[in-house]
Every structure is written in C-alpha cells, then in structure tokens.
Image (cartoon, rainbow, N blue to C red; front, side, top):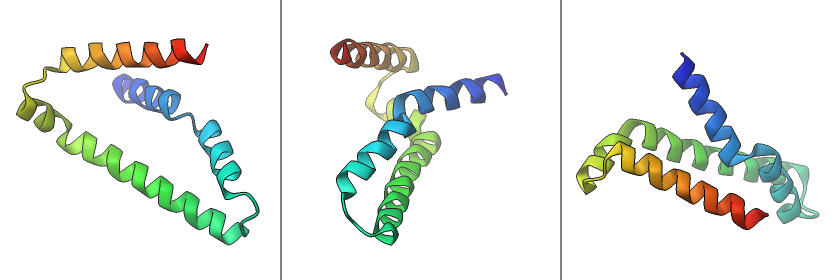
Length: 88
C-alpha cells in the first residue's frame, strides 16, 4: 500500500494539477464554460490513457528496448532535476 501512495504522490508532483488547470484556463480565454469542461475532460482522458498504458505495458516496453528499471529511475531523476534547475 505504501508503494501505491508513494507513486500517486510522485505522479501528482510531476503533473501538478493546479498549474495544469491554470494553463487550461489561460488557453481557453473567453470560451464558453461547456467548451472548457469538454476540453478539460478530453485532456484528462488522454493523460489517463497514457498513464494506464504505462502501468500495464511499461515493464514489457522497457524490456523490449533493453532498459533496466534502475537505469530508467536514474535517468528519470536526472531529467526531473534538470527541469527543477531550469525552473530556478
């Protein structure tokens, strides 16, 4: 159970739903509320599909390319560190 909570917190930290909501509002501008909701739902479903595919097929995709999980974690940490450093 602890691993699931840890993973969910990590995903929320990377996705940052508050910033995504602000970006959606900024992009929509003066659109009608119904259109904004529809666009938000489409974006949410696309992200959910990508995450579910990653959950189900992630290890087999990495194995197909010959990438170990430890290497994937290390490179992911480096990428997140670079993004954080660029945000400073």
